[in-house]
Image (cartoon, rainbow, N blue to C red; front, side, top):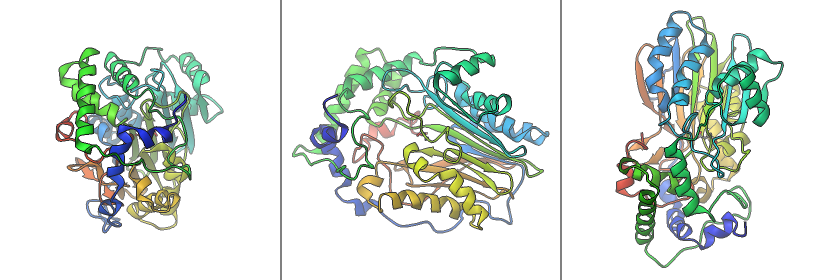
Length: 418
Ligand code: ASP
Protein backbone atom coordinates (compact mmCIF):
# COMPACT_ATOMS: atom_id res chain seq x y z
CA UNK A 1 0.00 0.00 0.00
CA UNK A 2 1.69 3.17 -1.14
CA UNK A 3 -1.08 5.68 -0.68
CA UNK A 4 -2.19 6.29 2.85
CA UNK A 5 -5.75 7.24 3.58
CA UNK A 6 -4.56 10.63 4.73
CA UNK A 7 -2.62 11.15 1.52
CA UNK A 8 -5.54 9.93 -0.45
CA UNK A 9 -8.00 12.34 1.03
CA UNK A 10 -5.71 15.22 0.29
CA UNK A 11 -5.64 14.42 -3.38
CA UNK A 12 -8.75 12.60 -4.36
CA UNK A 13 -12.07 13.54 -5.76
CA UNK A 14 -13.71 12.38 -2.60
CA UNK A 15 -11.37 14.47 -0.60
CA UNK A 16 -12.29 17.53 -2.58
CA UNK A 17 -15.92 16.88 -1.91
CA UNK A 18 -15.26 16.35 1.74
CA UNK A 19 -13.60 19.69 2.09
CA UNK A 20 -16.75 21.43 1.13
CA UNK A 21 -18.52 19.38 3.74
CA UNK A 22 -16.46 20.73 6.55
CA UNK A 23 -15.72 24.19 5.27
CA UNK A 24 -18.38 25.71 7.42
CA UNK A 25 -18.58 23.52 10.46
CA UNK A 26 -20.46 26.21 12.32
CA UNK A 27 -23.49 25.35 10.22
CA UNK A 28 -23.73 21.95 11.75
CA UNK A 29 -22.94 22.80 15.30
CA UNK A 30 -25.87 23.68 17.37
CA UNK A 31 -25.65 22.90 20.96
CA UNK A 32 -26.75 20.46 23.46
CA UNK A 33 -29.98 18.79 24.31
CA UNK A 34 -32.94 20.14 26.13
CA UNK A 35 -35.44 17.87 27.84
CA UNK A 36 -36.24 14.25 28.38
CA UNK A 37 -39.03 14.59 25.83
CA UNK A 38 -40.29 11.27 24.55
CA UNK A 39 -38.34 9.33 27.13
CA UNK A 40 -39.80 7.79 30.21
CA UNK A 41 -39.16 9.81 33.30
CA UNK A 42 -38.95 8.17 36.67
CA UNK A 43 -42.69 8.59 37.23
CA UNK A 44 -44.02 6.94 34.10
CA UNK A 45 -41.33 4.27 33.74
CA UNK A 46 -42.83 0.83 33.14
CA UNK A 47 -41.62 -2.72 33.56
CA UNK A 48 -41.09 -5.00 31.74
CA UNK A 49 -39.45 -3.12 28.93
CA UNK A 50 -37.26 -3.88 25.93
CA UNK A 51 -35.25 -1.24 24.07
CA UNK A 52 -33.17 -1.90 20.97
CA UNK A 53 -31.83 -0.57 17.68
CA UNK A 54 -34.21 0.09 14.75
CA UNK A 55 -33.40 -3.18 12.98
CA UNK A 56 -34.83 -5.17 15.89
CA UNK A 57 -38.33 -3.78 15.47
CA UNK A 58 -39.85 -6.86 13.79
CA UNK A 59 -38.67 -9.18 16.54
CA UNK A 60 -39.53 -7.24 19.70
CA UNK A 61 -43.22 -8.15 19.97
CA UNK A 62 -42.51 -11.88 20.27
CA UNK A 63 -39.60 -11.29 22.65
CA UNK A 64 -41.79 -9.06 24.81
CA UNK A 65 -44.47 -11.79 25.03
CA UNK A 66 -41.76 -14.25 26.06
CA UNK A 67 -40.53 -11.81 28.72
CA UNK A 68 -44.07 -11.23 30.02
CA UNK A 69 -44.56 -14.95 30.38
CA UNK A 70 -41.59 -15.10 32.74
CA UNK A 71 -38.81 -15.66 30.21
CA UNK A 72 -35.23 -14.79 31.07
CA UNK A 73 -34.08 -11.26 30.21
CA UNK A 74 -30.99 -12.32 28.26
CA UNK A 75 -32.92 -14.96 26.36
CA UNK A 76 -35.47 -12.26 25.45
CA UNK A 77 -32.60 -10.10 24.16
CA UNK A 78 -31.25 -13.02 22.10
CA UNK A 79 -34.71 -13.48 20.55
CA UNK A 80 -34.56 -9.89 19.34
CA UNK A 81 -31.01 -9.77 18.01
CA UNK A 82 -30.95 -13.15 16.34
CA UNK A 83 -33.66 -11.85 13.98
CA UNK A 84 -31.26 -9.51 12.14
CA UNK A 85 -28.46 -12.09 12.52
CA UNK A 86 -30.54 -14.61 10.56
CA UNK A 87 -31.79 -12.10 8.00
CA UNK A 88 -29.61 -12.23 4.86
CA UNK A 89 -30.97 -8.83 3.82
CA UNK A 90 -29.69 -7.05 6.94
CA UNK A 91 -26.14 -6.43 5.87
CA UNK A 92 -25.00 -4.98 9.18
CA UNK A 93 -25.35 -8.10 11.31
CA UNK A 94 -24.81 -11.88 11.03
CA UNK A 95 -25.62 -13.67 7.77
CA UNK A 96 -25.19 -11.29 4.83
CA UNK A 97 -23.16 -8.77 6.84
CA UNK A 98 -20.86 -6.65 4.71
CA UNK A 99 -17.41 -8.24 4.80
CA UNK A 100 -13.94 -7.02 5.70
CA UNK A 101 -11.59 -5.63 3.05
CA UNK A 102 -10.70 -9.19 1.98
CA UNK A 103 -14.32 -10.17 1.42
CA UNK A 104 -14.67 -12.23 4.63
CA UNK A 105 -17.54 -11.63 7.04
CA UNK A 106 -16.25 -11.25 10.62
CA UNK A 107 -18.73 -10.89 13.45
CA UNK A 108 -18.51 -9.46 16.98
CA UNK A 109 -20.92 -9.81 19.91
CA UNK A 110 -21.16 -9.58 23.67
CA UNK A 111 -23.75 -9.97 26.37
CA UNK A 112 -24.26 -9.46 30.09
CA UNK A 113 -26.72 -11.33 32.29
CA UNK A 114 -27.71 -9.12 35.21
CA UNK A 115 -29.30 -11.68 37.55
CA UNK A 116 -26.18 -13.86 37.62
CA UNK A 117 -23.76 -10.99 36.97
CA UNK A 118 -22.01 -12.80 34.15
CA UNK A 119 -20.66 -11.75 30.76
CA UNK A 120 -19.65 -13.37 27.48
CA UNK A 121 -18.08 -12.07 24.31
CA UNK A 122 -16.69 -13.11 20.94
CA UNK A 123 -14.72 -11.07 18.41
CA UNK A 124 -13.74 -11.54 14.77
CA UNK A 125 -15.74 -14.75 14.32
CA UNK A 126 -16.03 -16.20 10.82
CA UNK A 127 -18.56 -18.70 9.43
CA UNK A 128 -20.98 -18.68 12.38
CA UNK A 129 -23.99 -16.39 12.05
CA UNK A 130 -25.50 -16.35 15.58
CA UNK A 131 -22.56 -14.83 17.42
CA UNK A 132 -24.88 -13.35 20.04
CA UNK A 133 -25.67 -16.91 21.08
CA UNK A 134 -22.01 -17.88 20.90
CA UNK A 135 -21.21 -15.00 23.29
CA UNK A 136 -23.90 -16.34 25.61
CA UNK A 137 -22.42 -19.82 25.29
CA UNK A 138 -18.97 -18.48 26.25
CA UNK A 139 -20.63 -17.04 29.35
CA UNK A 140 -22.49 -20.23 30.19
CA UNK A 141 -20.05 -22.95 29.17
CA UNK A 142 -16.56 -21.62 29.82
CA UNK A 143 -14.59 -20.03 32.60
CA UNK A 144 -13.68 -17.20 30.21
CA UNK A 145 -15.39 -14.00 29.20
CA UNK A 146 -14.00 -13.42 25.70
CA UNK A 147 -12.93 -15.64 22.81
CA UNK A 148 -11.72 -14.30 19.47
CA UNK A 149 -11.02 -15.40 15.91
CA UNK A 150 -10.32 -19.00 15.10
CA UNK A 151 -10.60 -20.12 18.71
CA UNK A 152 -14.05 -18.59 18.99
CA UNK A 153 -15.13 -20.28 15.78
CA UNK A 154 -13.84 -23.66 16.95
CA UNK A 155 -15.62 -23.18 20.28
CA UNK A 156 -18.86 -22.37 18.46
CA UNK A 157 -18.53 -25.47 16.27
CA UNK A 158 -17.89 -27.57 19.38
CA UNK A 159 -21.07 -26.14 20.89
CA UNK A 160 -23.02 -27.27 17.83
CA UNK A 161 -23.36 -24.00 15.94
CA UNK A 162 -23.34 -24.77 12.21
CA UNK A 163 -20.55 -23.39 10.05
CA UNK A 164 -21.86 -21.65 6.96
CA UNK A 165 -20.78 -19.17 4.35
CA UNK A 166 -21.97 -15.79 5.66
CA UNK A 167 -21.20 -13.84 2.51
CA UNK A 168 -24.41 -13.55 0.50
CA UNK A 169 -24.17 -12.93 -3.19
CA UNK A 170 -25.47 -9.39 -2.77
CA UNK A 171 -22.92 -8.50 -0.08
CA UNK A 172 -20.17 -10.10 -2.19
CA UNK A 173 -21.09 -7.91 -5.16
CA UNK A 174 -21.19 -4.77 -3.03
CA UNK A 175 -17.76 -5.70 -1.69
CA UNK A 176 -16.51 -6.16 -5.27
CA UNK A 177 -17.91 -2.76 -6.17
CA UNK A 178 -16.19 -1.19 -3.16
CA UNK A 179 -12.93 -2.95 -3.95
CA UNK A 180 -12.88 -1.82 -7.54
CA UNK A 181 -13.65 1.78 -6.72
CA UNK A 182 -11.81 2.19 -3.47
CA UNK A 183 -8.74 0.06 -3.84
CA UNK A 184 -6.59 3.03 -2.83
CA UNK A 185 -9.11 4.55 -0.44
CA UNK A 186 -9.25 2.15 2.43
CA UNK A 187 -8.77 2.07 6.19
CA UNK A 188 -4.96 1.96 6.03
CA UNK A 189 -2.89 4.94 7.08
CA UNK A 190 -3.26 7.32 10.02
CA UNK A 191 -6.83 7.63 11.18
CA UNK A 192 -8.86 10.65 12.01
CA UNK A 193 -7.62 10.52 15.60
CA UNK A 194 -4.04 11.11 14.45
CA UNK A 195 -2.93 14.61 15.54
CA UNK A 196 -1.59 15.24 12.02
CA UNK A 197 -4.76 14.26 10.21
CA UNK A 198 -6.06 17.09 8.10
CA UNK A 199 -9.35 17.71 6.44
CA UNK A 200 -8.99 17.20 2.69
CA UNK A 201 -7.84 20.00 0.40
CA UNK A 202 -10.31 21.81 -1.83
CA UNK A 203 -10.78 21.18 -5.54
CA UNK A 204 -11.70 23.63 -8.25
CA UNK A 205 -14.25 21.30 -9.81
CA UNK A 206 -17.82 21.89 -8.61
CA UNK A 207 -18.57 19.31 -6.00
CA UNK A 208 -21.95 18.39 -7.46
CA UNK A 209 -20.28 17.44 -10.76
CA UNK A 210 -17.70 15.31 -9.02
CA UNK A 211 -20.32 13.48 -7.05
CA UNK A 212 -22.58 12.99 -10.04
CA UNK A 213 -19.70 11.55 -12.11
CA UNK A 214 -18.82 9.21 -9.34
CA UNK A 215 -22.36 7.96 -8.80
CA UNK A 216 -22.80 7.36 -12.52
CA UNK A 217 -19.55 5.38 -12.68
CA UNK A 218 -20.54 3.32 -9.69
CA UNK A 219 -24.00 2.60 -11.04
CA UNK A 220 -22.53 1.38 -14.31
CA UNK A 221 -20.07 -0.88 -12.52
CA UNK A 222 -22.86 -2.19 -10.30
CA UNK A 223 -24.82 -3.14 -13.43
CA UNK A 224 -21.71 -4.82 -14.87
CA UNK A 225 -21.30 -6.81 -11.67
CA UNK A 226 -24.87 -8.08 -11.96
CA UNK A 227 -26.33 -6.24 -8.98
CA UNK A 228 -30.12 -6.29 -9.33
CA UNK A 229 -31.78 -3.09 -10.52
CA UNK A 230 -33.70 -2.57 -7.27
CA UNK A 231 -30.48 -2.70 -5.20
CA UNK A 232 -28.32 -0.51 -7.43
CA UNK A 233 -28.69 2.60 -5.31
CA UNK A 234 -28.28 0.66 -2.08
CA UNK A 235 -25.03 -0.77 -3.41
CA UNK A 236 -23.76 2.63 -4.55
CA UNK A 237 -24.61 4.16 -1.23
CA UNK A 238 -22.73 1.48 0.69
CA UNK A 239 -19.63 2.10 -1.38
CA UNK A 240 -19.84 5.88 -1.00
CA UNK A 241 -20.72 5.70 2.69
CA UNK A 242 -19.23 2.47 4.07
CA UNK A 243 -21.87 1.72 6.64
CA UNK A 244 -21.69 0.76 10.23
CA UNK A 245 -24.60 -1.20 11.62
CA UNK A 246 -25.28 -3.27 14.65
CA UNK A 247 -28.06 -4.26 16.96
CA UNK A 248 -28.04 -3.69 20.70
CA UNK A 249 -30.89 -4.77 22.99
CA UNK A 250 -31.38 -4.07 26.71
CA UNK A 251 -34.11 -5.86 28.64
CA UNK A 252 -35.76 -5.36 32.04
CA UNK A 253 -38.40 -7.70 33.45
CA UNK A 254 -41.15 -7.16 35.99
CA UNK A 255 -38.92 -8.35 38.85
CA UNK A 256 -36.24 -5.80 37.98
CA UNK A 257 -33.82 -8.27 36.38
CA UNK A 258 -31.81 -6.88 33.49
CA UNK A 259 -29.64 -8.04 30.61
CA UNK A 260 -27.95 -6.51 27.57
CA UNK A 261 -26.69 -7.90 24.28
CA UNK A 262 -25.00 -6.46 21.17
CA UNK A 263 -24.12 -8.13 17.86
CA UNK A 264 -22.66 -6.84 14.60
CA UNK A 265 -20.73 -7.48 11.43
CA UNK A 266 -18.93 -4.25 12.32
CA UNK A 267 -17.55 -1.64 10.06
CA UNK A 268 -17.91 -2.54 6.38
CA UNK A 269 -14.60 -3.28 4.60
CA UNK A 270 -12.59 -3.09 7.82
CA UNK A 271 -9.12 -4.53 8.17
CA UNK A 272 -9.21 -8.27 8.91
CA UNK A 273 -9.04 -8.85 12.64
CA UNK A 274 -10.47 -5.45 13.52
CA UNK A 275 -12.73 -5.64 16.55
CA UNK A 276 -15.03 -2.72 17.17
CA UNK A 277 -16.82 -1.81 20.36
CA UNK A 278 -19.55 -4.41 20.04
CA UNK A 279 -17.62 -7.31 21.62
CA UNK A 280 -16.06 -5.09 24.28
CA UNK A 281 -17.82 -5.44 27.62
CA UNK A 282 -18.20 -1.87 28.86
CA UNK A 283 -18.12 -0.30 25.39
CA UNK A 284 -20.73 -1.91 23.11
CA UNK A 285 -22.74 -3.24 26.05
CA UNK A 286 -22.77 -3.05 29.82
CA UNK A 287 -25.35 -4.18 32.36
CA UNK A 288 -25.18 -3.73 36.10
CA UNK A 289 -28.05 -5.44 37.89
CA UNK A 290 -28.05 -2.72 40.56
CA UNK A 291 -28.24 0.22 38.16
CA UNK A 292 -29.13 -0.31 34.54
CA UNK A 293 -28.05 -1.40 31.09
CA UNK A 294 -26.64 0.43 28.08
CA UNK A 295 -25.44 -0.35 24.59
CA UNK A 296 -24.13 1.35 21.49
CA UNK A 297 -24.25 1.44 17.72
CA UNK A 298 -22.02 3.69 15.66
CA UNK A 299 -18.34 4.52 15.42
CA UNK A 300 -16.84 1.69 17.42
CA UNK A 301 -13.34 3.14 17.72
CA UNK A 302 -14.73 6.26 19.35
CA UNK A 303 -16.94 4.34 21.71
CA UNK A 304 -14.11 2.11 22.92
CA UNK A 305 -12.11 5.20 23.91
CA UNK A 306 -14.86 6.45 26.22
CA UNK A 307 -15.93 2.97 27.44
CA UNK A 308 -19.37 4.21 26.47
CA UNK A 309 -21.79 1.68 27.93
CA UNK A 310 -19.91 1.43 31.23
CA UNK A 311 -19.58 5.19 31.48
CA UNK A 312 -23.33 5.55 31.03
CA UNK A 313 -24.20 2.97 33.68
CA UNK A 314 -21.74 4.56 36.09
CA UNK A 315 -23.25 7.96 35.39
CA UNK A 316 -26.67 6.60 36.31
CA UNK A 317 -25.23 5.02 39.43
CA UNK A 318 -24.14 8.51 40.44
CA UNK A 319 -27.59 9.94 39.91
CA UNK A 320 -27.84 11.05 36.30
CA UNK A 321 -31.02 10.34 34.34
CA UNK A 322 -30.65 7.93 31.40
CA UNK A 323 -30.55 10.85 29.00
CA UNK A 324 -28.02 12.84 31.00
CA UNK A 325 -25.88 9.73 31.36
CA UNK A 326 -25.86 9.09 27.62
CA UNK A 327 -25.26 12.71 26.68
CA UNK A 328 -22.31 12.83 29.05
CA UNK A 329 -20.70 9.88 27.24
CA UNK A 330 -21.25 11.65 23.91
CA UNK A 331 -19.59 14.76 25.34
CA UNK A 332 -16.55 12.64 26.19
CA UNK A 333 -16.32 11.68 22.51
CA UNK A 334 -16.48 15.39 21.64
CA UNK A 335 -13.81 16.10 24.25
CA UNK A 336 -11.48 13.56 22.64
CA UNK A 337 -11.47 15.84 19.60
CA UNK A 338 -11.60 19.10 21.53
CA UNK A 339 -14.95 19.73 19.90
CA UNK A 340 -13.35 19.89 16.43
CA UNK A 341 -16.29 19.66 14.04
CA UNK A 342 -13.94 18.95 11.13
CA UNK A 343 -13.41 15.58 12.76
CA UNK A 344 -16.65 14.98 14.61
CA UNK A 345 -18.59 15.13 11.37
CA UNK A 346 -16.95 11.88 10.32
CA UNK A 347 -18.30 9.86 13.20
CA UNK A 348 -21.59 9.09 14.86
CA UNK A 349 -22.87 7.23 17.86
CA UNK A 350 -26.23 6.15 19.24
CA UNK A 351 -26.61 5.00 22.83
CA UNK A 352 -29.50 2.91 24.16
CA UNK A 353 -29.94 3.49 27.87
CA UNK A 354 -32.23 1.64 30.30
CA UNK A 355 -32.37 2.23 34.03
CA UNK A 356 -33.44 -0.37 36.53
CA UNK A 357 -36.75 1.38 37.21
CA UNK A 358 -37.70 1.28 33.50
CA UNK A 359 -36.72 4.86 32.62
CA UNK A 360 -34.93 4.86 29.26
CA UNK A 361 -33.34 7.12 26.69
CA UNK A 362 -31.93 7.02 23.19
CA UNK A 363 -29.25 9.61 22.51
CA UNK A 364 -27.03 10.24 19.51
CA UNK A 365 -24.06 12.38 18.60
CA UNK A 366 -25.82 13.73 15.49
CA UNK A 367 -29.49 13.89 14.56
CA UNK A 368 -29.06 11.19 11.92
CA UNK A 369 -27.18 10.29 8.78
CA UNK A 370 -29.23 12.61 6.62
CA UNK A 371 -32.11 15.07 6.93
CA UNK A 372 -35.42 13.34 7.44
CA UNK A 373 -33.78 10.19 8.74
CA UNK A 374 -33.25 10.74 12.45
CA UNK A 375 -31.67 8.12 14.66
CA UNK A 376 -34.39 6.11 16.38
CA UNK A 377 -34.58 3.50 19.05
CA UNK A 378 -37.25 0.84 19.43
CA UNK A 379 -39.11 0.65 22.73
CA UNK A 380 -41.65 -1.90 23.99
CA UNK A 381 -43.08 -1.37 27.47
CA UNK A 382 -46.53 -2.65 26.60
CA UNK A 383 -46.64 -0.49 23.48
CA UNK A 384 -44.23 -1.14 20.65
CA UNK A 385 -42.94 2.07 19.09
CA UNK A 386 -39.96 3.92 17.69
CA UNK A 387 -38.61 6.92 19.58
CA UNK A 388 -36.37 9.54 18.02
CA UNK A 389 -33.01 9.68 19.77
CA UNK A 390 -32.05 12.97 21.39
CA UNK A 391 -29.02 14.37 19.56
CA UNK A 392 -26.14 16.16 21.21
CA UNK A 393 -25.33 18.03 18.00
CA UNK A 394 -27.69 19.54 15.51
CA UNK A 395 -26.97 18.32 12.01
CA UNK A 396 -26.07 15.13 10.22
CA UNK A 397 -22.98 13.00 10.38
CA UNK A 398 -20.84 12.17 7.42
CA UNK A 399 -19.92 8.56 7.19
CA UNK A 400 -16.56 7.74 5.68
CA UNK A 401 -15.80 8.65 2.93
CA UNK A 402 -17.36 12.01 3.50
CA UNK A 403 -19.71 13.93 1.28
CA UNK A 404 -21.27 17.33 1.74
CA UNK A 405 -24.76 16.24 0.91
CA UNK A 406 -26.49 13.03 0.12
CA UNK A 407 -28.01 13.27 -3.36
CA UNK A 408 -31.78 13.12 -3.51
CA UNK A 409 -31.82 9.82 -5.36
CA UNK A 410 -29.75 8.18 -2.63
CA UNK A 411 -32.00 9.66 0.02
CA UNK A 412 -34.94 7.92 -1.62
CA UNK A 413 -33.20 4.62 -1.08
CA UNK A 414 -35.52 3.93 1.81
CA UNK A 415 -34.47 0.30 2.04
CA UNK A 416 -31.12 1.57 3.23
CA UNK A 417 -32.13 4.66 5.14
CA UNK A 418 -34.63 3.05 7.41
N1 ASP B 1 -20.20 -0.14 16.49
C1 ASP B 1 -20.03 -1.06 15.40
C2 ASP B 1 -18.58 -1.25 15.14
O1 ASP B 1 -17.83 -0.29 15.23
C3 ASP B 1 -20.67 -0.63 14.15
C4 ASP B 1 -22.01 -0.01 14.29
O2 ASP B 1 -22.57 0.02 15.33
O3 ASP B 1 -22.58 0.46 13.31
O4 ASP B 1 -18.19 -2.33 14.77
